[in-house]
Image (cartoon, rainbow, N blue to C red; front, side, top):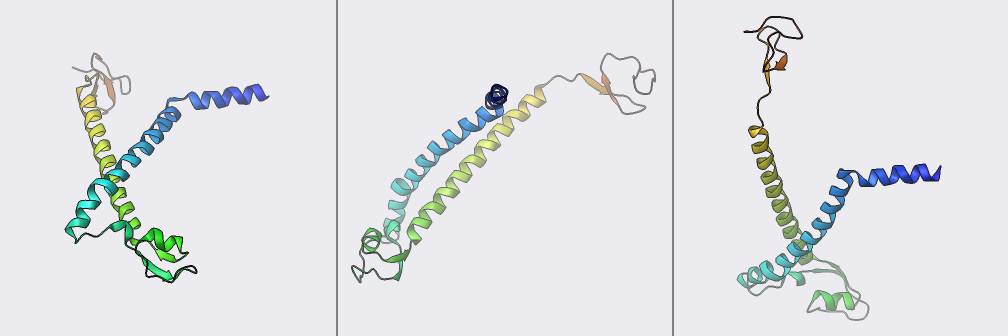
Length: 153
């Protein structure tokens, strides 16, 4: 019984779709790290500089002051170290920008794959024709329709 379940499980894992999904998840995780780094390290510093030397990661609102230090806090890490409860607007903004970039990249990738698939489909040779009497698809070389038995020219 266990051997049969193991065999079924192994067959399930070895199907192409499961392996493709696993590879996609691994690549997606690595791609997300790259995009997050691009947003935090490349895009946000110049954007913050244009907006008056603002560090987005330190945009936060204190909801409740910390028990160890009443504030004001110079940075988000100082507020968190003091035990303050905060709404982290800058971190959310970074995540939102990362999400939009990842979404746009995935959209463009899918669009490119669909374009390639359309070219392959368009390049496939035509192997059937339509019967003029019953509109059934039949082989090109057919002289009689197998569906309505009409003679074809």
